[in-house]
Image (tube, rainbow over all chains, first blue to last red; front, side):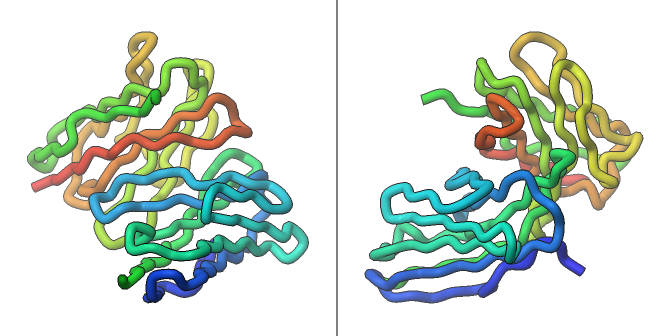
Length: 108
Length: 113
């Protein structure tokens, strides 16, 4: 059983649409990370959160500790947002468990 | 803006050979990490390193793997005797402290023939 599950696996949207990517985890965590992986393979950290909500530009991340669930939202999506978005749970012992990623394609 | 760098970007080696992957973390960061991503699969945690010792390692990080901070700037991952299944992208990351965001390097693609 995967300890970190993401949905959907693939997501295609039209430019301007509101995007939501979900992440559920089954382990105790100290923090949850949202990462963006570009087609070339590079990984960029978007958010690290342990409670509540964070916003950066058009990106919003929320986490519900009781429900062990986090969401990443993208408002006014743009083709340059096309990437794989990865949820990663940092366990209490500093180990990290990664989701399989959500491949987002935003069409102009 | 400071960034994590990794060399080489691509390493090709023969099975059984030793490889050393190099990383230069952000200069004031104290925690260092190695991850790997086999093609088409999810990213996997290998090891975290703090205060010149391993603080956590995964089941993947067996006796074939070792990490070192040989000087004040480099952080290396050594694979002693490479296997075909070691072929993957290896990412280094660093963070200021345990509770801070991690910054990732661009990765080293290792191909074992």
